[in-house]
Image (tube, rainbow, N blue to C red; front, side, top):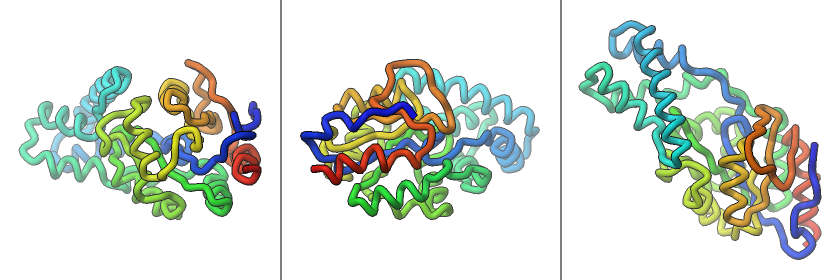
Length: 244
């Protein structure tokens, strides 16, 4: 842990916390082969061809994401539809978005206990997350399967495929803040990436916390606080709730 007291905690109260999804709340696991197998079966073509097309789409996804635009599931469906002359993109979308493709994903260590403790202290919780090839609707189901969804304000779940832009755009953070009915300076954001989670939240004036328990991102400006385990969050954040 590399942490200091919540910035400004002596003069302002913390009211809410937002979380990134992948490699923060949930540990990301590779889904390429499962996704390729499902699409290949649906389209009746060779799995190796589908896997190659998905890998190409991932390169496009990364380039688009780095430019601040959303690619996501919609982009993948369009890419595969062009590649394989798909006549029913809606059916293909359903296959790719199927929750069972993410069945191997598990919550980050101590996620459930930490969320429960933060909620019990009166904090409102939201999510600000880029979705990649799995849409927000699928990620909600994944949270529900692991009994995490009810910890969050339903109106404060900001997924990039639904908002239309990825982090670090201000809009995706503002959607969650509006749902939480809090100001940026009253809200902490927890995430693993410096260039999106830290940069985006900081630009709005939010408190930033980088979680490196699943992925230690080294490129970019550091967060206000760094934690190795989500269980460290209550001791860092709750004094700013109780002390004001």
